[in-house]
Length: 230
Image (tube, rainbow, N blue to C red; front, side, top):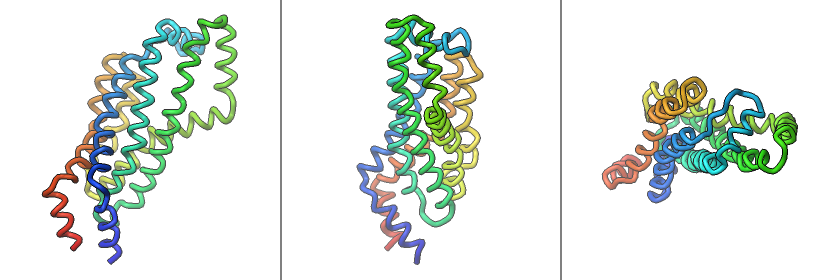
């Protein structure tokens, strides 16, 4: 009886909300791809090189920041709706934990991108050494370290947890779990354009979830769900 109650509650989600959530998860990887592709290259991993890369083409830096910011916003908005893809108790707890942590991480990641506007503008307003001093001071603050850590762990590492829950429930295949980690590895290990293309291809699990959400709003599926819970 508890399974029937659970299934009925998820299936009453309004179709427009499912469509919007599905569209968000389909669109987010393309915004992420654009943000990675327009991210200015830097000479090395130093703070000075990072600030200089943002300042060298401030317009491009802002474009990249906007695309990445809204990609994470769309993920935060779309991921909670994946709970409506579940039809029983199997995988529900794991999926719910993955949804909560991924959503929180995505919010953290989108918020961190605000700094790009300031770090990109600082070298043009003050000497680079002063800009580096401000940047390093802020980056070393314990609350900022915690913010960054929770963003990376929640927004990146917990996506496989979410997909593992959905795979356990039979919504997606287990292949989605390792594949969703590839975009972040590709961004760090491969040349910019190649890494962005590989990342886009490996965001297929998110796009698949988006397509599944949209599919659930089609009349035949809605009718089948209604009959199943009658």
